[in-house]
Amino acid sequence: MAKEDSIEMEGVIIDTLPNTMFRVELENGHVVTAHISGKMRKNYIRILTGDKVKVELTPYDLSKGRIVYRAR
Image 1 (cartoon, rainbow, N blue to C red):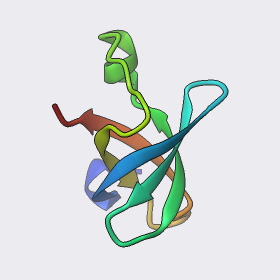
Image 2 (cartoon, helix red, strand yellow):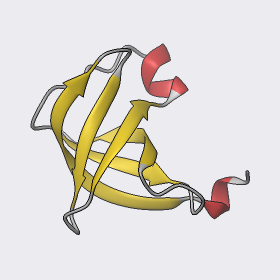
Image 3 (cartoon, one colour):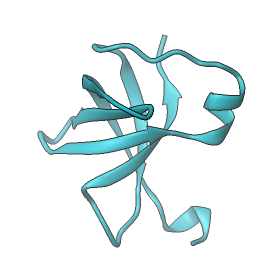
Image 4 (spheres, helix red, strand yellow):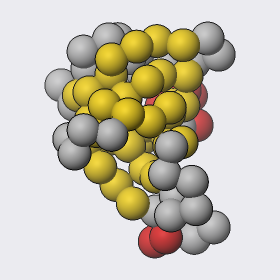
């Protein structure tokens, strides 16, 4: 899948799940399950409940995503 095909949305972490998965409530009210991107994992960026994040969603499955940025 090309990077241009993904949909980027803002959201807030509402729950931490096992295996570095998170439940994210998007700004439109939908709740998705997301994992941390490889660059964030490599740089040891910590994510906590309540953090504002940017999530990449695929057009094929809008219930799963990848966290690509954590706002300060």
